[in-house]
Length: 122
Image (cartoon, rainbow, N blue to C red; front, side, top):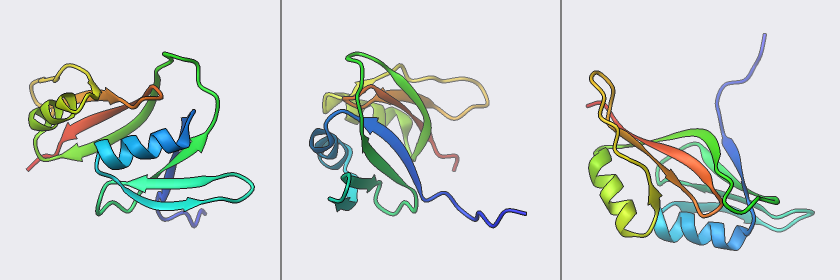
């Protein structure tokens, strides 16, 4: 039987870690939880109050390549968040409104990592 109890960190690939920190900290408002130089630089960012972090892992990326991360973020109002992110220059997708499903939309970081924002059920 496994002793795994939680998810701590999910890694995403970024071509420029400093540029990625700027996007996640300054554009999305995430906290930088860890930034350590070692054999490789290890960076973790997260929304305020989140137990799970994103690791900004250095790696090669094809220009214009979109990678579906499978990562979903919760917000209280998806339409308002879409408007806010779009006004800050973030590449946002269409607001999806399906019967019986919370409103949601996708957005891409500068490295082409695609995420989904989902409105929290009240």
